[in-house]
Image (cartoon, rainbow, N blue to C red; front, side):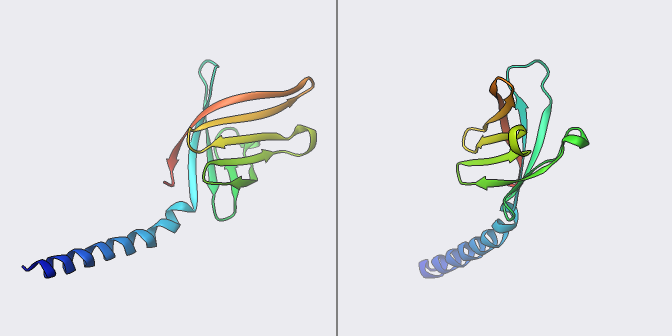
Length: 125
């Protein structure tokens, strides 16, 4: 084969691959799931979360049914922030998407308590 034909074949293959990846990427990015484990306690349980990128919500999808919820979220390339609950009992979450570190601010009578988690993605890359 001549260099021109090899280049044309390579360009066609590369274009086909790019089209396939672009077509597949929106579906893969619509939902992200991640698992978080509380730090600094013995035998922590994993908590599973699902982020719906299209509707900008975070849902707790594991644990006891009474604790499952879906909340509106602010989603950026570097963080996901959301609040569970309303008023004085609202708990604020901040997930650093780069490090996987999540902080949860829990209201207490004496003020806010910070609870820390280590998280990793389980799907939706």
